[in-house]
Amino acid sequence: YSINIENKVRCKMEKEQNGALKFLGIVMIIFGIAYAILGTLTITGNITGIFPGHENHEIINIILSYIISILAISGGVTTFTKKYALTKNIALSLALLGLISLIYIKVSQNIFNNFDCIAIVLGAGIYYLAVVAEKELKKIEAIKAKAKEKKKAKRKENPKSKTKKTSK
Image 1 (cartoon, rainbow, N blue to C red):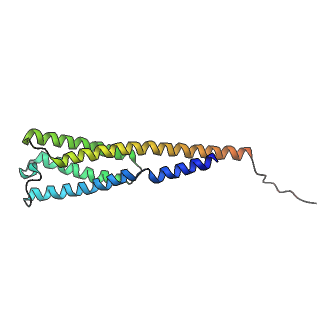
Image 2 (image 1 turned 90 degrees about the horizontal axis):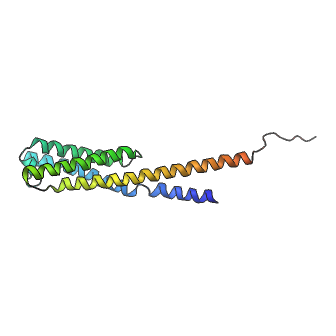
Image 3 (image 1 turned 90 degrees about the vertical axis):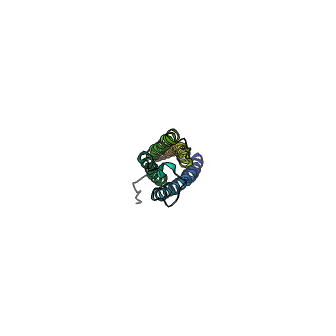
């Protein structure tokens, strides 16, 4: 009976484990694509007032924003895998680069950039959810290992006879 409960808990954890992480991953991919498109349109002069560093053609700001956009897209994609260590590293990098870009723009132009703030929040959120998902995955693996050990112990207790009885 306890094995059935553990199996039900494991199945439920596996189904629900990544819902929020995958949702933020989708948001992160959309954010990365929008950030890259808007940055490119601002550099070309098609739109103004969104990225002040891009309008002034500041190379550092442009490089930081494209790195943030690439990290957002790749981080969003990694949320669909079970490579939580990689997801955590990309999310942490995204949050730190967003913070660096935010501080740089604030110091150099005395302007607050909402997109960098969004990058920080998304990076921190995905980092947290990846840590939680990694812990849950370890719990699931422990439950699987425990169930496997119980099955082995049960087989040793009740060995099946492989020899056939012959009748005379």
